[in-house]
Amino acid sequence: MEINLIELEPRHAHDLLTSMIIPRPIAWVSTINKMGHTNLAPFSFFTGVSWSPPILAFSVVNRSDGTVKDTVRNIREVPEFVVNIVSVNLLATMEYSAKPIPYGTDETSITDIHWLPSKTIKPRRVQEAKIAFECTLERTVTVTEGPNAGNLILGRIQLVHVGDGLLKNEREVDWFGLDVLGRLSGNRYCTVRSVIESETN
Ligand SMILES: Cc1cc2nc3c(=O)[nH]c(=O)nc-3n(C[C@H](O)[C@H](O)[C@H](O)COP(=O)(O)O)c2cc1C
Image (tube, rainbow, N blue to C red):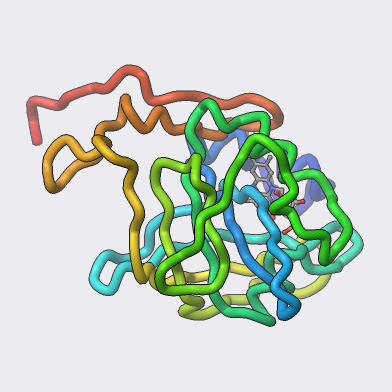
């Protein structure tokens, strides 16, 4: 079977694509607007781009009415953000933060999580996240315009926070300790609780 995604109604293409590009880590992004109000939202179109310099990227898709999401709006005003990594125990709070909340509402009022100041940038980070990347905006790549258009945000990692005891050695994080949440599609997620060790690499 062959599928031409562009011929499908956008939500249909979304559902198919997000069930095919799996599993995806979740960038739980904290930003501020010029008034200093904090916004927090999850994005699973998220990956690393390069390590020297260390760059990551996530994609924020415009709402179906063509408006940009608050995360993009804030990054245009204050080009800095924290990418907090989501562990399984943070699922409910992460999902809550994805609900439409009126622009400018300070989301530090979200219960269940606490906030810590960042060292190199103004937006704060989520204390409960076991890994947090402090980033400055490297560039935004705008992919088309209008409804559902993508805004690829590239961030230069200025500092990484790693929870105490989470490094197995100086070069690797303990995956089981991190218990990272992976996104499948819809309200389905996965974990990293079994690891395949190859004998050919
Ligand atoms: C697990 C999860 C992953 C998501 N991934 C994305 C994504 O990659 N891109 C996107 O535009 N929206 C994504 N969303 C939806 C946004 O989080 C949602 O539109 C949110 O309201 C945006 O918030 P903001 O307007 O404060 O930026 C995701 C939602 C969830 C729950």
